[in-house]
Image (cartoon, rainbow, N blue to C red; front, side, top):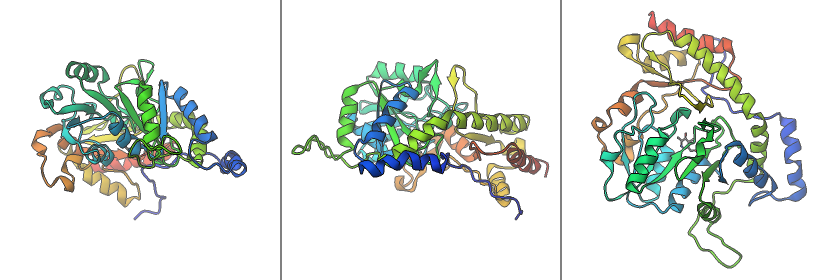
Length: 372
Ligand SMILES: *Cc1c(COP(=O)(O)O)cnc(C)c1O
């Protein structure tokens, strides 16, 4: 074990402590801690502008945003989705009593393969739930064409896509709705938090009811809702982090550029795709390792870095379709690309304060494995 300091895969962005104390001071005067407080309302307005979306509503976390927008949209039967994602996407579908139908992914973007969606549509299909993985966006144009042709809803899991724009439009404007996560480990955080963006005001109104037990007024409860509200401390963190997020993304993009410079020349390592007309957020840096060409596997790199106290992540591995609760119901042979990528992908440390020296150290430990 080396003497060098630990490098974790991510490190949460935070404002200065003094700045935070100043921001939360007013909460002690108002004693208004949650339920659409002043900070919540301010954050909702600021995020609507920042994300360039027509409507937004905030949640305690991204997962509840997804669970509840699925419910609000009234989906039924089967939902076509990707297995190459975080547990949340698949769990939200299942917890709504729906059946996830897993579609393979595109070998370049790792997002849902639009050429394989149509063959999975049945008379029970009600929606498509794709994921903008690592901030690489889905083929939103083609997905909308398919949805229109078959009368399906589209809900994007945009948990990784904060601040991304496509052709100058906020990524949250595509499909019928999108969900964002503001978890501590994401590009932008409200400690924990999340949002639904959509065009349809009636969906937003339904979500505002759902996230507060379905309470319409003092005497009427109209929905069987849980509690999924964002509180004032989360909103305070969000207001301050929003001031700094552009600077944080800029610093992240320098880290990404350094990784590209050092790893782009290495045979057997594929870097994430750069997409045209997309304003990227530098959320993640996933590399895909071809063990034959590189001479060592993804797991070898993971373990080797670990020995130097550098913590990468096998993100996303395993596929959600092979989670234990499915009891082997889904065949990996039907998902050849997703299976292959999940065995070869490694997400490298990436956060705003990662230094160029640390990136060089990470890359040299990767490259030294190749020459062993
Ligand atoms: C983080 C994440 C979520 C869930 O968000 P939380 O805010 O942690 O509840 C959903 N989907 C994806 C792809 C994520 O990465």
